[in-house]
Image 1 (cartoon, rainbow, N blue to C red):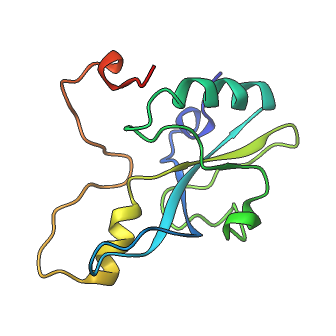
Image 2 (image 1 turned 90 degrees about the vertical axis):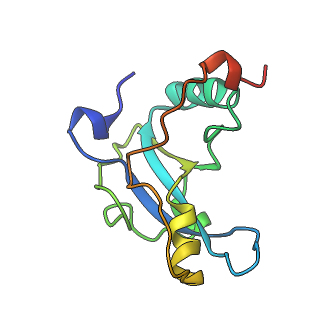
Image 3 (image 1 turned 45 degrees about the vertical axis):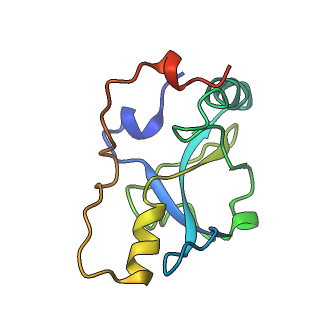
Amino acid sequence: MTLRHIDQNKNVAMFRTSIETAAAGPFRGPMVVTMRPLRAAAAIRAIQITSRFPDVHGAPVHLGDPSLIGIADLSRPDYGDAVEVLPDELPVFWACGVTPQEALQRARPEFCITHAPGAMLVTDLLNRQLASF
């Protein structure tokens, strides 16, 4: 299985959703998700693998019809680059680390340091230390 955005040398497509996050003081806002188009068998396997890692994105939050989570047009991501979803594929959506940036934009703190889309935290933890089972 390959990931189209990597094959095309693009940043993953990221979308604001209609899924509201739990507020924490002034921090609130919509969940941002990444989307990867996958064939059904690959989507099932991806769910099996990623569900073992709930502390590092975990399983997808949605698959299939993007309008059910407030996404009107997959060709117009809010962040990153669009990739085509082929007729034999499902759009699969994972919670994204850009979600806090949406909350920060609404809270408007005087100063904040965050990450850039596609550039995540690097740690010395091993995958087996992050797996839930």
